Amino acid sequence: MAIREKRFLCGKYLEVEIYPISKYEQKKSRSKKKNESRKEQKSLNDKNAKKNLRRRIHANFDNKDLIVSLSYDADNLPNSEEAAIRDRNNYIRRIKNFRKRNGLGELKYISVLEYREATDDKRTKTRIHHHIIISGMDRDKVEELWGKGIANTSRMQANELGFEELANYLLKDPRGKKRWSQSKNIVIPVPVINDYKYSNKKLYELSQNQGEREVFEKLYPGFVYSGHEVVLNDIDGGTYVYIKMRRFD
Image (cartoon, rainbow, N blue to C red; front, side, top):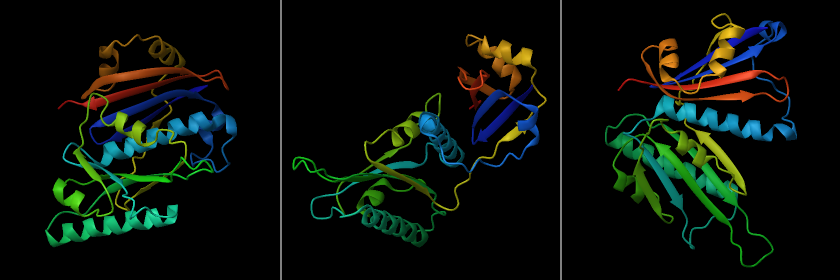
């Protein structure tokens, strides 16, 4: 059985997945599976969604950029999810126009809409709000351009794991609907795949590592160890090692 290394370089962050694959999996197309997800895979799908969002944030944004939270006042509350999306699109358009008029660069954004409808219980209300990561600009202007309620803007702040906590927060279970969209110019990290770097023995050794950072930093020079996780796949019994690194500042 071959051992696959899949590397995602996302800005200054490197994520590595190391896991066993069969000869059949090694030969077949690496395109995404198109079958609908099984119910028992929901947890895995949620985890993968957070990975994808985290990687896109790391590849496109840094501490100069902003996270914007938008909510509605009573007079502007939209009556549908579609109306909320129109509000979001119009807001993005106003930001783009401002940036163009003021000689700022092309806007990048990733937006998450949270939508929960009121129930038959009269004490509940429809709740809609937006979280948007945008390219850096004047924070007061970003808040001013909303105009439909409260806008809170903060500068993005990375820690040892970059913006992982932010990605997890944005995709937390909202007990309602969640819609994620992005600008067309967002860079989508593409993995570099190597099926010959690791042996079964080396995978086992890595799975037994208790966090000795020197081992991982020797494997990936130029990067600092941030953490790793070892998972035993209940379906195929394979051992999966996930490594997170970041470049020296």
